[in-house]
Image (cartoon, rainbow, N blue to C red; front, side, top):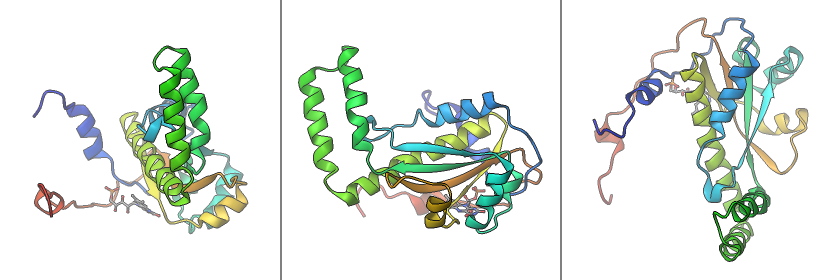
Length: 208
Ligand SMILES: Cc1cc2nc3c(=O)[nH]c(=O)nc-3n(C[C@H](O)[C@H](O)[C@H](O)COP(=O)(O)O)c2cc1C
């Protein structure tokens, strides 16, 4: 194995599976913050950090979420469900990020201006904005699940929810698109077995 690969990271990846039955467990705020902070270290296009994490922990809010999430019981039984949102207007983050970089001496004003105009150009296209929101928020979502696992929690990502109803019920501004719900907690029952394709089926070397 190459020396720059960390076996413990791979172990966490291999041990993460989707758990759907949870013990009643109050997650310490410290753990929740550690998981969210780790999720936020994900890479993102132009470092625009196209994610917002809605933390749904209050029992009454979990009950509101239940029918929106196709009555998937894990949203009630787990410690917390995080709605990972993608930012459709992540271009608005650019001045915050690039002005700070200029101030820190990491970038010239000229480069900052070029980057911002490049970003603004790209964001004229709504399809690009949507693709970027989903792509980048998904990277953060994956990191969130791995961080949870490495802290001794299990999780399940869910695309099975009514995004429109979620937007309405949870007052999500038009700027954001719901990407995934992720329930996190202490497993009551292990995940179902799930297989994976061998490398021969998932890898194409060179061109198709
Ligand atoms: C985008 C996405 C949507 C998913 N939606 C659901 C869901 O709504 N409910 C559910 O129980 N599992 C859901 N899953 C979990 C998958 O079923 C699971 O990841 C897959 O079967 C592999 O199993 P594993 O995660 O245990 O390794 C989803 C996974 C992904 C990546």
